[in-house]
Amino acid sequence: MAFRGRRPEHGGPPELFYDKNEARKYVRNSRMIDVQTKMAGRALELLYLPEDRPCYLLDIGCGSGLSGDYLSDEGHYWVGIDISPAMLDAALDRDTEGDLLLGDMGQGLPFKPGTFDGCISISAVQWLCNANKKSDIPAKRLYCFFSSLYSVLVRGSRAVLQLYPENSEQLELITTQATKAGFTGGVVVDYPNSAKAKKFYLCLFSGPSTFVPKGLNGNLGEEAARESTFTNERVPYRIARRGVVRKSREWVLEKKERRRRQGKEVRPDTQYTGRKRKPRF
Image (cartoon, rainbow, N blue to C red; front, side, top):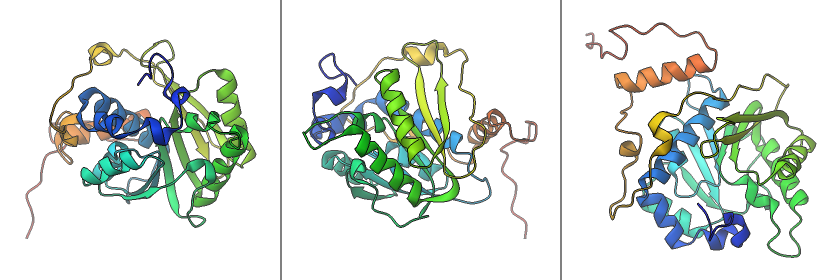
């Protein structure tokens, strides 16, 4: 998402950049929907949530609700916060299942302590590193955000924030303020040798420090070379996930593969994997 050859955050505050025209892209641009959905899936994977129950999650910079749709599809409940009225309008128009809130994360998160079991954020945190007015001090806004995030999370839970740091200094500024607020953790980098597919995930722990997951470093194949396509129709979320239907064999195999990448014990795949059982009476 370039802004006349520059980074989007250099073009002004997010509530102005993400106007109705920009919001429309998150409804009709199939590649953008696909990328956002995959990043949400990876963030959820890195949260390491328990398998036996749905969780109550926070989506920061929720935009048009694409990442929230993924959370819903995985059986979780969520609340989204975003600074752009146009993006939230797009989310409402798409009938997303989560609750939506208009707010500036740099001013803190307005929730009670220990409200959420986890948090994800896609392409939002780097916006706090830019001062759009004289009163904006990036370090203070970052600390206000991270300290409030630390408060609203259940102790021992995680936050996974996908971001696009402009340089190493900006990444250090972000991680320093997160540590100052009480978090432990680290940065997971997927596909570090790819200019286009490289992704940064800041994995934060609100309890005792634990291991930081390894980044992905496999072959991207043709998937990374997909070009952007536009349509006059809204792209249904399930089509964006290439028709993967919940509880189908493909869905089950995807979930099992995610658990294997997390290092968890998973039963081997068989011809009966994902097969619907007949009801018993």
